[in-house]
Image (cartoon, rainbow, N blue to C red; front, side, top):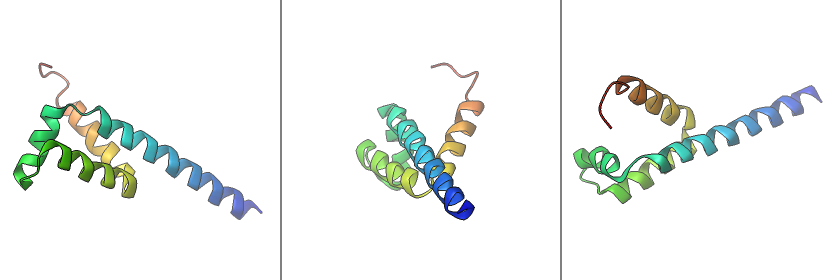
Length: 78
């Protein structure tokens, strides 16, 4: 029984992480999204779709990358 609870707890936590990661991707401005997609030859919409897929597959990676970017750019002009 405790194994089921922890499995349910992990599933709930993962769903929460995915929701947060998708929200982070949705909050990225179009100009930044275009800059992220430019090296790969993608437009902003394609880059956003790619990041949304990554947010579902690896939400912790997206959240960590966003956290690092925000921390790095803390003193930058908006």
